[in-house]
Length: 305
Length: 315
Image (cartoon, rainbow over all chains, first blue to last red; front, side, top):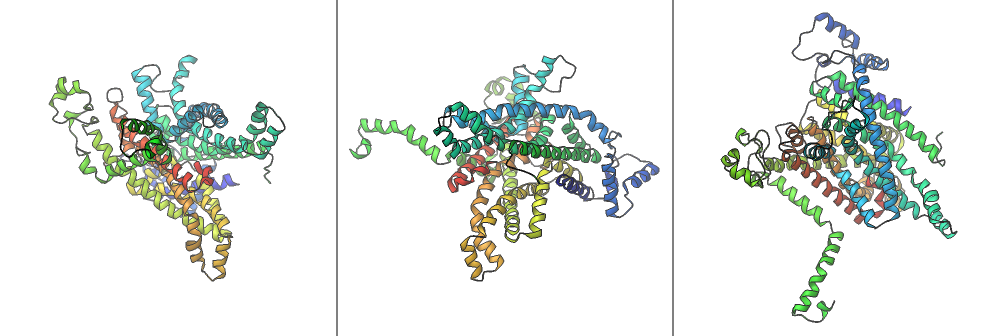
């Protein structure tokens, strides 16, 4: 329900933007190119551009619903096809970065909460603060400059498909670090504060008073309750991934959807950019739905009607 | 302690004692007051306000003879290199591909970054405060609709929406600000609304209502001061993120138009020549980093100072 509503608002926003400036037919035509009147008429009919605004929107939304996101003006191919080709690369990068962020951020948060005030804690917090203050695209460039150009340890750009596994893995190191740092910082901060709060609660004190060993208190009593918070923030972090993926793909020339979107902007390819926006939004909504469901499994106190 | 009480004249011994305390007291001072962030922000504000006086070159002045000139500390370049020798003035942080002075551009870039972020933050905060107070105070259908809208808005990928805007509406400083305002205000509504919901049932508000205060007066004389703390904390915590967003958009070439020097765009300019001229991209990025870091530190400090209860708002 909520997801459907979001999609409708998103589509209206994009539709409104398309009509903000001038005759929307210009968005379908490549500037400076001649288009046969018949083709033009066919395009107009397909997108309902000769009808009133409400009908135009309905035609447009109908086409979208049927999975027809239009043709890319520049490449003269269906948008769904172009995005479909690039999809795997983005998903792979995002998943690897997400795993990296989780397996480093959450344990770091736990450790820094358990050893509050220790050098480890300060180090972890500083690391997180850097992750939230450094511009990702700049970290990427500096990383390329140090590790690829100056030291020559890692490849400069691309995905390295077709290479043996180890060589290919090298291509992932920098993009994953850059994309994963921000979410990692987020995970770390949230886990730390949740863990501190739980460790301070009455039932932990009771467990300790009963003589439960430290290990069991931390792993069984505290951790299970503290992990709820990082799970809730997972959806917020996903939004960060979407935005981050665009930047990281541009810097590392990663052949994914984000780069397609930026190229589409540079080439004034309206249909292609709207198509990618839709797919990203839909994906985000699906992910947040999954996160909501997971949330009820992890925390039985919450029940959705 | 001995140094303070025993003698007013400084014998070598007391001086030594006092000196021994200097590291510890200054460390304590640094931890208590946000000295470093304030220094950085004041420095940046000076850069922004007096840019024409500080910058040694015109930021858009192109001169191909100076193309990729090195920063001033490469002394052998300026003494022995055939190109370096011909340059009359050294470039403090080098020059870019078109021979534009990097330092001057960084100084002018401060202007755009700070102006856009602060104006967007201020307007976004006002708008968010209005929306939050109104929805929280009245409730009902308007509240329902607004909350839904905020949820939906948060679900949209902002960067991609910004790309669509740049292609259909165009680019410009004003458009950039409007986009950032749209990003800012929705983030405030929920927090402000929750606070207003608890404030409006307080005794002092009820008393004012009984005394005959109008809705407007209740909202802006009695409730607004109660949330002003929260607004200040949220605004100071999020201004850093706004600067980052603005830089990201400019980096992608859809933010600030290219005739105005901006940090994000400078980083993007230096990408092609990264292997021979690292300074073009490096210093603007350092500027962004220092600004955002100081803003975040200052935000944390304000939060802890005004109300430690707000700790959860860190993100």
